[in-house]
Image (cartoon, rainbow, N blue to C red; front, top):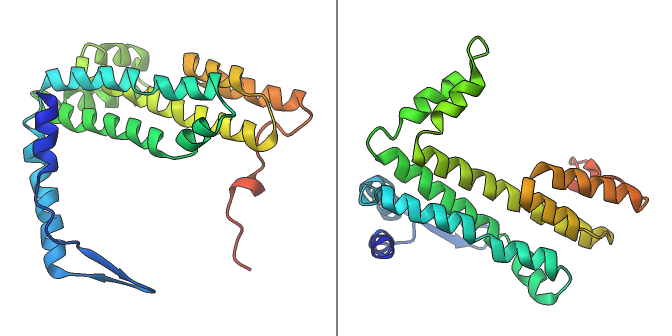
Amino acid sequence: SMLSKVESFASLPRKINPVSIHRNRVEVSVAGVEVASDLILNAPAQLVAFNNMDISQAFNLATFVPQPFWLLMIVLPNTKFTKRVMGSWAPVLLCSLLHLFIVIVSASQDQGTAPIIEFADVFDPSGDPQKAMVGMMRYPNFVSEEWSHVLTWDIFVGRFIWLDGLKRGIFSCHSVLLCNLIGPPGLLLHALTCLVYGKDALPSAEEIMVPDDE
């Protein structure tokens, strides 16, 4: 099963911590680097054990795993539980890991790199980019990659909308819902809502960027 394969991959040796942190310095052990190198080199071989059925299961996970997180932000946006769960990067990172799994395992399958080669046609202005993109949709694994790609960025932006709403006291449930349904228009709706509240459409660059050193 997919679970047993994940457990097998997770059982790779981790005997030595390659990095040791001591107050203000970081020490890297030679033995630790060797172990880390083995992990990197062995990872592709371990992932070969996965197949298209596992990608299909990962597709389902990528579709349904984010939904409870969306519900928390839409239905219970101000509760301590929602703030504890969605205040963490864990939901977004979990979705990102699912997407990465699909990408790597897809590339390990027969003709797994074919969509990557054809993807160049999407960026060829002398051809028909839309037709090229439609053609790539005949690859189930490419569909899985694109779908999990979209859902991961959607929840990333939806979380930003929710956080901004909390920080600036702006109602955001409707914007988060729209972001879940059709993506970018949810951000536009949030910006419009902020203007209705008499505030900046989105946080200013000064609020987001790290100030330059004096």
